[in-house]
Amino acid sequence: MKLWRTIREDIACGAGLLTRLPLGWLRVTGEEWSLSRSVWCWPLIGAFTGVLTGLVFLGLCAVHVPVTVAAVWSIAIQILLTGGLHEDGLADMADGCGGGYTAERRLEIMRDSRIGSYGALALGVCLLIRVTALAALPIILVIPALALTGTLSRAVLPLLPFTLRPARDNGLARQLERLTRNQVLGCLFSAFCVTVLCVSSRIAVLTCLLSLCVAAVSRATAKRFLNGYTGDVLGATASITECVILTALVATGNS
Image (cartoon, rainbow, N blue to C red; front, side, top):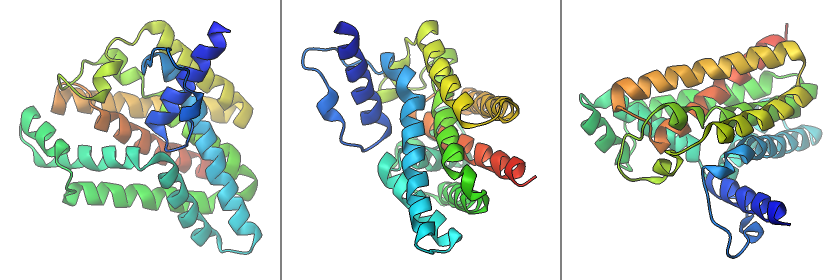
């Protein structure tokens, strides 16, 4: 019973962070809200969001909407489901790292709610890649591809706070400062379970390696330019991972 209450609490916490899905009713009164404990379900939430996006795409194609138009609507629905959280992080990080000359100035720019040239360009390129990649996927691969993309793009996020210190003394991301090895392994294990259900072992190995490469580059960038990670860094990592994985799946699916 205690385990079930904890699972409900973790799913409510993870979904509350990563989506706008109305799952707050899962929260159990009296249970501690722990962002770091909830990381095990982040890949599952990403997979669920991906499946919903895929169903929208297939539904639109079923009523003879052209694939490119269906892809635009599907990605728009996905952004609504996630509240644009990751896209906002990508734009903020691009503005900060592109426009500041010191870590302090970059963090200050990233806190600014206004979007600059670097952020607009990064966001535009990201959306173009996702839309065109989705439109180019073989129809039979759409749901597995989006589930896998959602899974891996969330699975790599805990690796950054586990290996970096927070760039700020406050902020939501600081709650992940004390991530344990077991919590990170739990996240990676749930991602592994989804991955092996979605694609072949060859594609699974390829996409996992690509996801780790994106995480490594994001970590190096955050350490050099910001002296640590922020929530925006995590969001940018998720968005870039989605672009890279979708591109790889298009290449392998059409080969």
